[in-house]
Length: 131
Image (cartoon, rainbow, N blue to C red; front, side, top):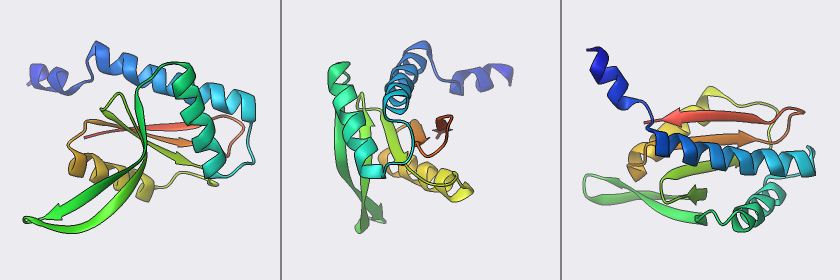
C-alpha cells in the first residue's frame, strides 16, 4: 500500500518542471507587482517563458468530449513543457471552483499537473493541482 502512494507522487523531472514554471511566475510578480489584469500577466508570463527558453503554448484550445462527441471547447492560458496546464488569474482569492475546474481540465487533457497562479496578492498565490 505504501508503495502505491509513492508511485503517484511527482517524479524528479516533474518537480523540476513545476519549479521552473513557478520561478517564471515569481519573476513576473516580482517585477510587475499586483494590480494588473489577467491579460497583462499572461503577456508577461509568455515573455518570461521565452527568455527562459521554456517550451510553451499560449491560448491552447482543447475539445471536451463526451461519449465520442464534442461537448464543448475550453481555452487554456498556457501549457508548459507539453505537460503542465497553467491557469493565470488576477482575482481576490482562489476558490474551490478554481481547483475543480483545473481537475476537470487535467482529466480532459490527460495531463497530470496543473498550476493555478493568482497575481492579485502581495504574496504570489500558486496552487498545485494533480490528477
